[in-house]
Length: 301
Image (tube, rainbow, N blue to C red; front, side):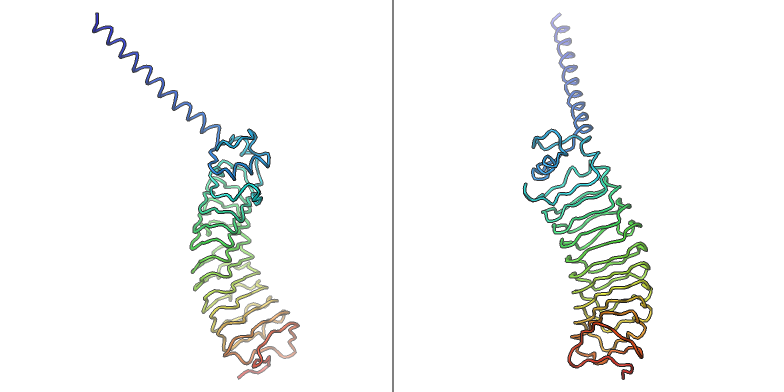
């Protein structure tokens, strides 16, 4: 009898323990299906202040249903402190515009935010980012981070405006035919390939380490700012739409802008080896910046 009693007790105990374990799993499932984890207090406070986190309590969580209705999220308000962790952003699955400039964000996963069209993450501490899933993105602003690499840019077939200025990028190849504006000043660029960017109109490359630059296929280019580099020569013969051209502080020894009849601004000073800039007969450029030893002339030896 004792043996049977012990057996029944043991069996009951096992069933209770199993039920308890199952209950814990069910609880976890209910939480993950209902709530998002928001570990950053500054992030959650801002969500509460904006009326997005409707429970109104800083408790490291918010309802998924609250996040799913948000299409634009502007986090520029620093009243509640700088955000370091944007965990929870993955639940904002209908987000089309994200603004999170001037925070302390070191990493971010936007893989679930596939509807994003505009991404502003300037002034953070990102050293890398993967945007391969953000194929609807039209504008991407990553100014003033610590970026050395970007994964997935080639997937952004709708990308029109890209700002990577003030980072640490050394090489960049743009295969995006949709791109119109590219700003990548104040980096460590030694190589840039924009030959596929046939619709580009505005390129800012000031303060880099470029020795060569091929823009022969960029026939729609209107503004080209490549000052403070190491360019030794540049062919502008195919860029007849150019209106603004900055090439000061380079190492140019010759320059022909005779085919660039639409130029309204030309800055070529501080090129020690460049004394004559060739223009076409009758060409008038309203604004010109030259060093004392430089001249515009129809004939340059």
